[in-house]
Length: 276
Ligand code: SF4
Image 1 (cartoon, rainbow, N blue to C red):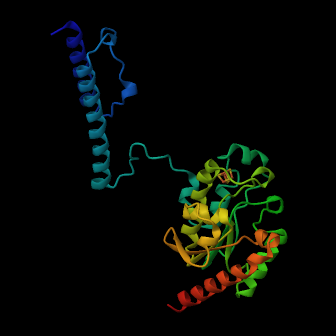
Image 2 (image 1 turned 135 degrees about the vertical axis):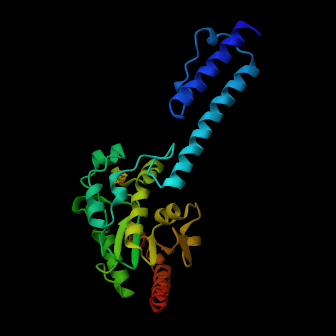
């Protein structure tokens, strides 16, 4: 056996000794520094064996952590689990809103927004309306659906016997994108967990998503709104109807009729759920 292969075997024995002496502490590839003699020319078989051995150690360590979890119910974080954040443990909307009021996750939005627009309404609502993102008025006042489009939404809700106080209204994105541009995928990825958390706390019976952006994002589809509306979908196990955004209705009154049909269906489903 060549001196080089001997060196590789010595290194491997050293890693195993370290692994045992440190109570099976996981050895990551980044922690393994080949010895000087070992930095020469390996043949491919040797390298593959060495990598397989390292991976076996890491896998066995992962299994060990999972077993400890199951057997002892200890809160040992599994490897690769993202760090938990304070807002995740909130059990009410007030403390949750307070936790994320200075959210810095989207660097640009955190710099350009006036405030985080968390959402408003009944914390125990049966109905949650979800829009896209705050605009200038919302950013200014810290409330969703303000201004002309907001007034139209209020009127639509009133027409199907809902007041804004009895439901909860929010957006997918909690901060205003500059120039009211569409939210970017990274921004949605950052902010959507906040919507999940809101729904987890509120536990609504129904969701009304308004606008193609909200509908397509929540349903993870590129289908046009015209094909998504008029029927119920599910979002996180909650029944969801999608319809036109009130701002779109202001631009195109032809969409008022299908919106009216959608919200009537929505109200019917709500009444049905209430009787169950
Ligand atoms: S959009 Fe959401 S995730 Fe991004 S900074 Fe605002 S609150 Fe944070």
